[in-house]
Amino acid sequence: MDFDFGPEHDAFRSEARDWLASHVSGAADRRTWEHTLGAAGWIGLGWGEDGYGNRRATLTQQVVWAEEYARSGAPARSGHIGENLLAPTLLAHGTDEQKARFLPPIAAGAELWCQGYSEPGAGSDLAGVRTAAVREPDGRTYRVTGQKIWTSLAREADWCFVLARTEPGSVRHHGLTFLLVPMDQPGRIEVRPIRQMTGTSDFNEVFFDGAHAEHVVGGEGDGWRVAMSLLGFERGVSTLAQQIGFAEELGAVVRAAVASGAVHDPVVRERLVRQWAELRTMRWNALRTLGGFGDAGAPSVTKLLWAGWHQRLGELAVLVRGAAAGVGPADWSASAPYELDAAQHLFLFSRADTIYGGSDQIQRTIIAERVLGLPREPKGAV
Image (cartoon, rainbow, N blue to C red; front, side, top):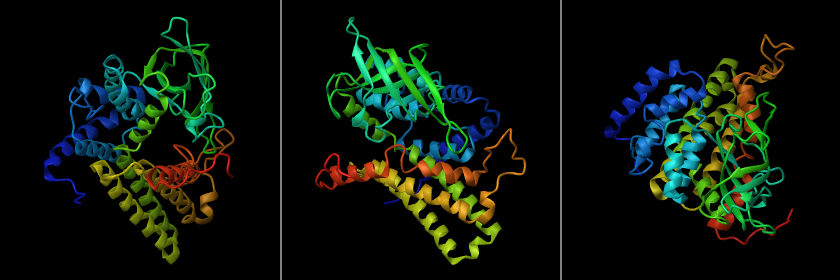
């Protein structure tokens, strides 16, 4: 299989690269940047024939755009959850009315989304969801009560798609419903930032206290099927863009190894080469999967590959620097006691890579049961 891009993609790559070069330096706050992307038609590439207001693009062009965006140094996207997770889910399971209501604002960068899946005590085990949604007497609205955790972008989001239990007494994946919940409900929704060991707060707790929701995707009780479909979209084109960032991080680690002299250690050299080879393999696997050559376990394989790779890179980032990796910056002060350099942040943040988004254990179970057909693991087993 040929993994190279042909000359027919050069024009599109040049257009993307030139546009980014002329706009990235002037990027303001992240919400304004989403508006800029939407106005230029760069959100929602490949959303089918309708397109909902933005340009059409082939799968290969979507990959080209994702790679050029990663290379450009553009701001981290605050609209990627709506664009890359909710939008494909609505295209697959939503009604025409839902598509017309929600897709254009996402394409314009006007509405931001967060994901309400994980809960305390049910992080990777989505079937353990306890957040409840009760239908109101009007038969159209639900009241949502419960707690979600590790919710990225919850403080910025206008909407949250929530997996909730709508059938009292139901267990596991039965009785779940996929709801779209507006976040602007003072007194009914509270967002609390979670301070991480990196010193930042990328994630949040979200508390729903009778929050109203009236949009159901896929029908009541069909939430598990919709949620599983969405998780498949989570590891699509964006995986290739993620690997561009990984390559830049690996390059920084190699430069640090040269500067510290650690590169002369044959064990370190072997680990650096292995990281490079594994990254190339991940790229080929991602392209192969996007080309339709994957199977039902492809998303889980992808997650297993990059999570372990990135965690090992974080370990290598501090190893090659020696004792200097444990020292803070020269201007470390009581007013800013938690400033980390890039290598330290990489090491600490990557500790969670094998947990969030579905832990390694969960991914291996999915592969074993759904792909290899092995006996299901007894519930409650240690």
